[in-house]
Amino acid sequence: MDNQLDCAPGGYFSISESGFVQSVNRTFLNMLGMKSADELIGRHIETVMSPTNKMFFHTYFYPHIQLYERVDEMYFAFRTVDKQSVPVLINGVRQERGGEVVIDCMALLMRKRLEYEKDTLRSKHELEELYKTTREVNDRLEALHEEYESKQQELIEMNRKLETLASTDPLTGLHNRRFFEDCLRGELLASKDSNLPLSLLIADIDHFKTINDTYGHPVGDFVLIELARLLRETAGALSICARFGGEEFVVLLPAVGSEDAVAAAEQIRSVIENTLLGTHRVTISVGVDTSQPDSTEASLLERADLALYASKSNSRNRVSHAKQLAQT
Image: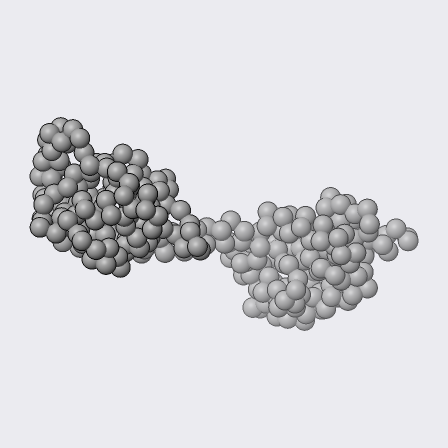
């Protein structure tokens, strides 16, 4: 260590982030009544503190320097080799040196000792009371920490469920309209960026009102649930299926062109037509549109809806593509 720093009028010591002494100057060793730096280097700085001051160090010094990277003018006391208290004014700075985080500190002997001792006696009494209950407090803190971890996990799970509820249709388990609209916006942007097509299917259950009026809403709900299951299974893993409202469903097919989209829609229509839902058979009408360079969310929905209207107007239980309407 540089001779000037070694004999500086203030005690200097450097500790690791975990508190082990890395270097000290002669002034600090003299304060503690030590003859050699070997008596302190490699030991924890708390070995030259009383139990009360250890508590003080943990309560004020560590949290403060971790939060603000430095400590200015903190009243403190070290303990000499013969157990005497050495009151000091301590300054510290937390910094990185040689790839390692260290805490450099300067300790100046107190001049206004009587004033300091008055405050110290009061703090000492309070800290001794705290020290007596340390074990109980630590046990309580551990219990609170476990409770906190448990509550945090419950909160994470609750948030996950809320996110699922916010994006899911409660009856069918498919995505809801809001989630679908967000997906449509994102998939359309991705389609334009990648120069790949995006196809949209709108499917509507034929004569669904008759089912509700004849058999009641519980049967109607059962039909909706089973149809949603078939839709999800038939559309494929890469599709995005949602309940758009009432008996109307939508399917997004990323990177699928018009011909493949019509084929996919025909597959869905055929599976639903040929599957018995309880004791009922239903059919669907489907409208399809495929994105163009100038397509927007609104235009895709509008053109697919017009295609759906064409399917329903043309005896239902069929698939129509918007481009067929334009050709017609």
